[in-house]
Length: 335
Image (cartoon, rainbow, N blue to C red):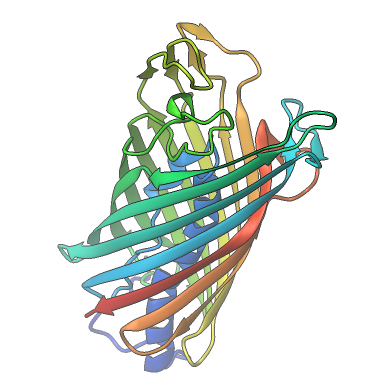
């Protein structure tokens, strides 16, 4: 397969410093690709991206901790026919702060934990009616994930790096059906246990690294009892459809170990089952594009950031809001 044993010198044309840059880039690039999934996870349909966290260890790292800040605003809407339109009588600002950590297990495995705090401001001002503004927040859905690299990028000249992804997302947040505010501004999670499974492929070409990841999410049924004064006046027994997330990314590493990346994702799920019956027209989809960057402050410390956008065009979403925003991440690692 053209394997390069770890004990051998770097391939011809690649300096030891260049190899180290690619090793770091393999960790940074996956984290940058996962940043676009973070935007999707903040939307109602897309918590399956919880199989990804921004805390992937590079090959030379044994553990890390980090903080991530996420800010987004809604500027449009995709209806059930995938038609895009602006939302002139509605505004929304979403914020999230994540504390995460990862530790290496065995030689090629790593376990990560992510604890989110979510805040939302929503305002509705329909013509001729009373405007309403609401602010809410709280703990989001906690995620535990496992990654195992069978092959790493660049280890084979022919076969790409191959990694298995497994995640479990706990419904520690408040579901929209349990939100006490009419605009559900205090909803912070999906309300359902989620099992996430995925496969990631990576390959390096000089200073370039390409990534393709496919994720599958299964959501358990959940029950939201009727609560007086909430948006839902009746109890709801709901099962969200399985969800698929496709992530693609290309990254470039500079000699100073800084990196830039261009990424895209597409998420789709079918119709939900509500109170024992399929809910027609409830399927959801959304596309996200992102430009990201990373800069090493030292051997242990790095900064990451990304700008993301749901394309404001018909056909790029379904029953979802269109958002844009920024993500900033600070990571401290140990080798």
